[in-house]
Image (cartoon, rainbow, N blue to C red):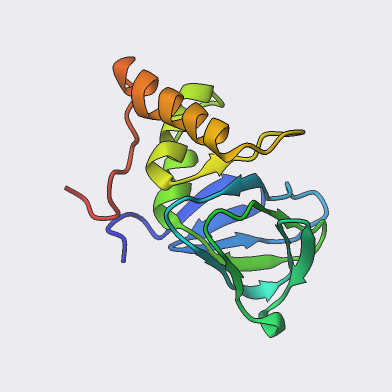
Length: 161
């Protein structure tokens, strides 16, 4: 469990509650979109608690609900998530990653790549998916250049120091 506040608002109509992401599902809410990415060192489980979530796993797209059960995503497999317009959704999420990514003041490549580096997340490049190139991109920008320029992730652990 985290020592940090239980609730964090990330976008209009999207709130993170502990390790649960929730999209209220109003028609004017933002859509939650997690672009295509992969993990080198861990598998991932997506468990929809309420509503529906579109999960693209490799070339297969699934609409996940509480009734469909958990979606297992093996390490190395590109995947993305998308909430559906006007449909509420609540699902489990990686709390440390989302706390760090939404703590960034504005979209900036170096701090984002630093959060990716610490979270074992590698973006899938459009047109050509090359794991070694995607890993090098994140490692150089997030693991070396960002810290050299003074960038630091806000949350190193879910426990307060």
